[in-house]
Amino acid sequence: MSDKSKKETMTLPSFVGIGGERCGSTWLHTLLQQHPKIYVPVKRKELDFFNFNYEKGLEWYESFFPNSEQAKTYQAIGEISPRYLNFPQYAQRLTTIESINKLLIILRNPVNRAYSHYGHTIRLRGYSKSFEEFIIDYPNTITHGFYGDHLEAFLQYYRKDQVCCLIFEEAIADVISTKHNIAQFLDIDPNEFGEKAGIEKINETYIPKLKKLNRIASRIRSHLRKSNLDWLINLAKQTGFQEVLKLGADQRLPPMQQETYLRLQDVFARDIENLEKLLGINLDLWRS
Image 1: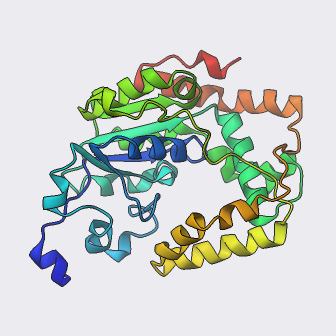
Image 2: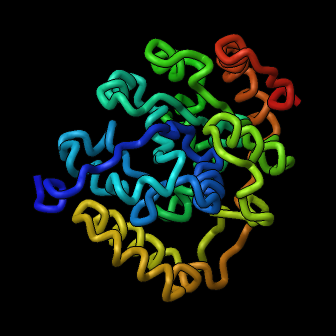
């Protein structure tokens, strides 16, 4: 243990956001940050401890959370790493931390999720082919949308009442109700959310004009995170470098063919039914 850890007992999370990827997790993280009684990591948004960083050990994970004295300020302490849902084989790892007794999930229409993933890859990797070619080149784009299949592994360890599932399309359409749902789940006062919290658009997809610069920036960010130099990434954001990357950007993605959309609806139909049964919810809005 470090000297700091010896002197101060660190606080581990009581809730974890496990997914899904490209489903509004950045929006959710920003919303939670705007409640004074909720703590989510500021230094790094996605810790990816239980999937990619488990070998770094508990002390590394603890370093992102407040110590026991600081924790008295908060009623709920958590983190959101949306790629956890993509790794159901690691679901049991969450149970090794006894304080984690609630799972938060935000999901969106899996076809739209796949299309958003396409835009994300264009921006970060300079991908230049059509969406139809993308889902062939990156088959995980489809499998990551099988939410029900992946969630089953987590429900082996957590009861249904320990899981709060937000549907992205509904969450952004009725932010007030979303705040109340989250507050009830985390046992906090919904009225302490900022009035404008959740209204702003976050992490919108764009097609960069400065493609090479965006790819280089993405590689540098990845290297800095691996080296635990998150403060440099945050400094770049604060100084407006992120906005430089968007100069001349186009908000329009290359279109998805209508027949592709209909085909993918069929691909995801069984899993959507499974998800409805698992959580006792209605997802007809994804079928329209």
